Length: 168
Image (cartoon, helix red, strand yellow):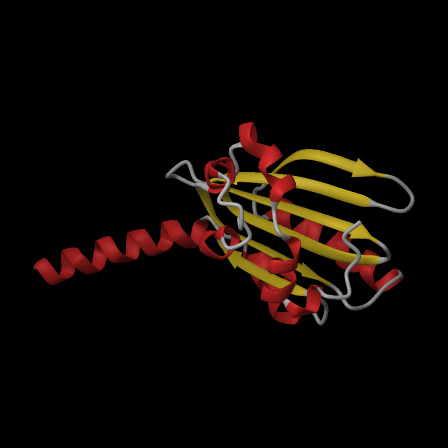
């Protein structure tokens, strides 16, 4: 009996954890040929070389960040962007913010699970490529200025594929 109760509790926790993550993001990550970056809170803390306490407050409720882009550009990338957008909306994410112009598109969505943990997803089309950013948890925006003190060289060493990116 105890074993059955334990299994039921474990299943409930697993379902709640899965509910907070987007299946569209996971599927896109598995199939995309472009850039992929995943970081848990602990990895992000390594960027805080100056031990800024505000940075730790900024990310204290963050579980992880995932960024995935396409390798293709042009029409294929725009098709991927539209498919991502439609998939995120179909999962029940609520659109929070939209930036659309000829060159750039970015749509920000949010969904809260039963434990009040938010998942934020941004679909984007920039520089001819489509992509998606998923953030599970939240940032305390009172401490957003702490991002100015991050050591981007550390990020480049943690993710060598970022070496060729322009940070200016």
